Length: 406
Ligand code: PMP
Image 1 (cartoon, rainbow, N blue to C red):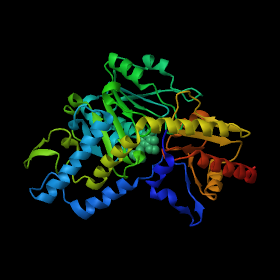
Image 2 (image 1 turned 45 degrees about the vertical axis):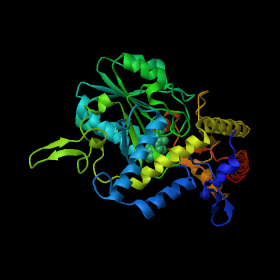
Image 3 (image 1 turned 90 degrees about the vertical axis):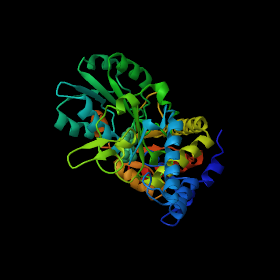
Image 4 (image 1 turned 120 degrees about the vertical axis):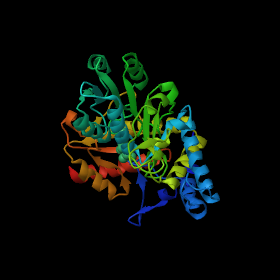
């Protein structure tokens, strides 16, 4: 079991008073997590002691910065059990990772005859890049539907796959429904049909133990800021044999071997996909965050968050006229709900007045809202530092809000 009281001491922001007076109850972790002090210290330490551009310099400071930067790549490799550091590309976040993949995979592997499958429970960042790429590359886009419990209709996947299908891009955990998709069996089915698979790990990186070799996914992407690391840093994991065949995304410094007035030859992976000066401090911060999570214990964190989700679900189910969206038995880390006809925004606002931070709206997953014919939901989402007591405070605030709004 986690020593949550001790863990909370590592996160200075949790002591913040809302509007200078109310204790903060932060239940918006699916949007972003708070940062432990070791990560914040790593950022200031970088700028105090190490700041130099990486990879390019012969001088001592640059080689120090490069060593720390590449250590972060090794820490990411280790955390997701990628075979080598060359499989790890740094980006600005999940959104940039998915845009990179949509563009480079389209150029490298797709044509007008190709088909790409995504699902109806994707975050917009795993829908819109495909719409944009589709406009240029003219492939066909298909969707796996989900049922009212919020579970993918995986039996439909076999029918959606045709000899023209080249790629499936799927979220591991829905940021709205909390559903954990059965990606291992889906990946197996896809590979039997020669279909590549991208996994959007934005929500799974902090709440499941990830082993990309065991999953056998072709690509896995995530954002640092959802796993206790700084904003502005993200990752693409890709299989070497695919990355090596892929055309670059951004052009610029670092990603080249040679440039003449007429032509460019590209650098080896992963640098081919990392044009320009990277966010070095944030990258180092990501490495530190992953080490922190490992030290706390990934399995213990998963068990604790699971306990919190079940505790909160049980308590929410006592509320009259509540609808919980996402009823899968295989669920993690967040709960979306509506109470009667109360507008999600009004409820969120009155909770905020009591110091409780939850998210309201469509959660960048409008097709999920369209499935249920709603505009948005209220969503609470958990991290390692949340407590039962915070859920009790949330419940009291919720009951007050309902009394005011009904
Ligand atoms: N995919 C999922 C499932 C998400 O939850 C999010 C963030 N809410 C994203 C993609 C986009 O992540 P980012 O904004 O960090 O790029």
